[in-house]
Each structure stands twice: as C-alpha cells, then as structure tokens.
Length: 611
Ligand code: F6R
Image 1 (cartoon, rainbow, N blue to C red):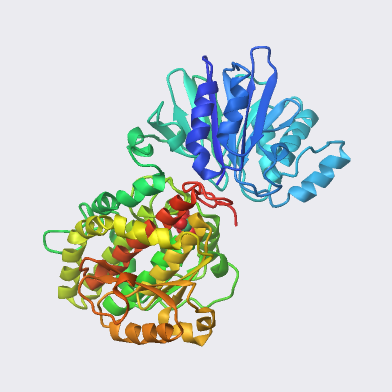
Image 2: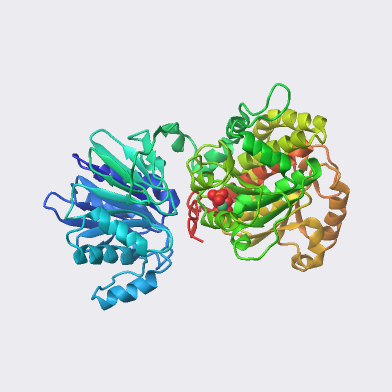
C-alpha cells in the first residue's frame, strides 16, 4: 500500500531516499514526500501530489543535504490525495511517516485539540505526530524510546512507522505494527523500509522486525526492543533477490515482463517439488503439517481479488480430483459473518503479498474457531501471513511489481494443483491421477510458452475491443473463475466495465444485455463441457451477440471463423492456467492501446494493507 524509506548516515542520504521512493512507487502513488534534518539542525520537508517524479523535480531545485531523513509514497486512506495529506507529518521537532490506519484517531484528535494542537491535514498520521510531541513535552526527562513505547499503548489499529526527532538528530526510531518494516544494513549507514525492493541497489543485508518491535538506528548501531520493551537480537538475512530482476529489462511495462516470465516462474515454483517417483515433495511440511493434512476432511479457502479466483479454480480440483469438500470465500466477508466450522477443516489463505489486511484479519478471527490448522500459499517468505499461519507453501514467482497480478496468480494455481496431488497421495485415492498431475505439471512451463507465442493474435483482438464500454466473459467449470479473473484484469488496467459469468447462468438475467455491440468472450476448451457450452453459444447467437470464442485449433464451432481465437492443444487439467495467460495478454494490450498507466492503474495499489 504505502511505502516507507528512511536512512541515517555520515553521508548525504537524499539519493537513497529518492531512489527508494521510485522503487516503492508501485505500492502507492497518489502523493509522496520526504523530510530531512539539515546541517543547521532544521527539518526540511517536501511534499507533492501525484507521482514521485513531481516530488523529485521539486527537490532537485533545492540541492538538499542531510545525514538523516524519512520518505513516503502514499495510497490515500484518511483524507484525499492532496499535498497537505502527504507524509511526512510534523509536530514541532517530530516528523513521521506511517503505514496503516489508526482506528481511534478521532478520539485522540479531540483530546489533542483540547491541549491546543492544530491540525493541518485530514490524516490519522498527523495525530500520531502530535501525540508523540505531547507525550514528549509532558515527560521531558523520558527518552524518545520511552515516549514511543507510551504512545503505542494509546494507538489502536496498524501503525508501522518511522520517527525522526530534531532534538535527537542522530537516531531514527522504527515501530512495526500491522505491516512489515525491515532494516537495511549498510557501510557506516543504516536504513528502514517497508519493502526490500527499495534498498536492493545498495544492500542485500536485512533484519526483519517482528510484530510490536521498536528499533533504534544510528549510522553505526541497531538496537531492537520487543513489544514488552526487552532488548532482542533479530536475525540478519541476506536477500536472494537479484537487483536486475526488479527492473523492466527490454519490456515496456512490469506487467508485460511478468506475463512473459511465467514459464520461468512456474519452473521455479515446481523446482524440487516433483519427485522422480511422480509424487509431490514439499520441503516446508514437517511432521505436524503432514499430520494435519492427513486428518483434513474439508478445506476452507479465504483470499481476495485475483488470489480468490485462484482459490475458486482449486475448489473444482480439490473436489473432483482429491475428493475433499472445499469452500472458498472472500476474506472481507469471512471476517464479518457467523459461520459453522466444518469438522476437521483446514483454513487455507492464498495471498501474493501475505500482507493483505483482510486476510490477516480473517486469520486472526479464525484462530480460536476450531480449524485443524492454518496454511498459507504466499509469494513472500517474510510476510506477516507466513509468520502467523501454522505452515505455508511459497509460490516462488519472484517479486511482482505490476499492480495487476499475473505471474503470482499462475504460480498460486501451480502450487494448488500440487497440493491437490499431495492430498490424493495422502488419502490414497488414485495414485495414477497423482502421477498424471506430476507429468502435466512438468510440461506446464512449455505450454505457457506456447500460448505466449499467440500474442499477435491477441493484440489483433485487442484492437477490435479497446473502444468498448463493456465486455462480458463467460466460462464453465474451472473456466468460470478464469472468466472472473479475465474481467477483473480488464477492469483494473483498461478501465472498461467487465463482468465474468458462468455461461449457463447468462439466461437467468444478463442475457437481457446482449446485443450486437457488447463483446462476449467465451472460454471454450475442448472438454466434457463443450457440448453444453455450444448450446449456450447458440442462445447468445440467436440474440445477435458479438461472440469471441477462445478455444483450440481442432474444435469445430458453427460460428464465423474470424471470431474464434484458436490456441494450441492444452491438457484439460492445466487449461485454466493456460487460458488465464491469454486473458492477461488481452487486458494488457487493450490498456496499452488506450495509453493507460498499466503498472500503476488509477486508485489502486499493490498489497492492500487496510481493511
Ligand atoms: C488484482 C490483484 C488483487 C489482489 C488482491 C489480494 O490483479 O492483484 O485483486 O489479488 O488485492 O492481494 P494478495 O494476493 O496480495 O493478498
């Protein structure tokens, strides 16, 4: 969501902050700002609405110099995307940047107003700055650490933040609460960020703060206190992410690069997990995890957005292949309804980032409800989700920077299919089926390569569709969630209204929309559902619907050939993964033709850390 970068050094830290903000922009991009303490011990603050580039232009005119500074890229929660609401927020000597939401900010604001504080923004963050200043002034013998410890006791909600104090110009304080913060270790300098991507150009050495930690940084020292105020040594880790992998390379957009990386990201995801005996091996599963899996009689999947669609596809697989009943629901609904936990049910949370607030709330809500255990499928090893679930499976898709999820989605589906095979093995249902899944997973990367060769065909279709106001996507069986995902991608980056439906459901209402103008994209692979799909296609054609059929080279249809988009043969088991790539390309090319900001679509942000 928002991005934090802060640095303390003997050298000028301006370029570290600037570079860091550029790298973090994918997390929030409606405004940005930075503050430094200069060599006259003055706080200098710069903030701008819109892209980080606007801020950088205004800083460059000022030739700034500072050894300590904090910076932020914002995705608005409280208060519009205006300059006055951009971080850092200042209260006299205190300046702060913050990720999260303070739930009781209104109450605190009323109290602070009574104490004479004036507010210049609509944010919850400014409340924290004034509260720190107020607490510090009331207890002027207390250290900054004690003041922050007192303040955090009064805050409700999430408040990962970095604090800079003009009266203590040789330290930065960082608090982790609710969203990740990590410390980067440099030579004679140290940094704090919400995402290692901001620092990979200058360090690979990181310390992940734990929930509730408060860290004190100087240019040469790092001290960490846990939520009980006890000094703790946190483990240093070496990042394995190659800095070059977070650049666009020869591609125009991260999304385009990430779509094309899918054969590689899927190869990484299956690496060392498919055994010679054609079984699945998950090194992450210990004896307890295996015990939980063998007891599992029901799977309850909770996720959001694209990850939810991955869950919906897997419901078909779990129930038809491993015979395990499975329910799937969006996290923001799961948290706020009363439900009955099925006997021996496993909670499975799917998330690319592992920081989605709705998922974390769902997990915390479910903790004492009687699930056998909680399993995460996640793309980030160091995420809160992986930390808080009983066990996890990583997707190994590599960092995804485009806001619209692509390679993380297909990696989730790949892990889910492996998990299905694992269950078949554990439940001893049909060993041949397990072997078939392993064989098919081995050829999946090549199959994805084959569909990527059809990008010109998809571009031609995009040219026919880019000016449309609405698009309908239809699928049946496992392709129904793929229709939902296709529609989501279109909405997200091309700003065209799109809906996904089960094709058989159209006649129950939505058929009324059908005319010769609204494009209807039908995913129709050659499987046991094809005859039914063909009947539904006839119904649409009888209403003069503008149909485009995604199918393979061999399937016969009665429709005009120019409206059939033919792809190579694909094995039924992996056809949802295959067709989802064609819809990613379609959304990408439509957005490209429209000239939209593909990697940073309006109003959105990567990793939604607020409910
Ligand atoms: C859409 C997209 C979102 C995310 C959703 C959940 O392209 O990326 O719908 O899937 O916000 O995010 P994660 O998977 O990080 O929990």
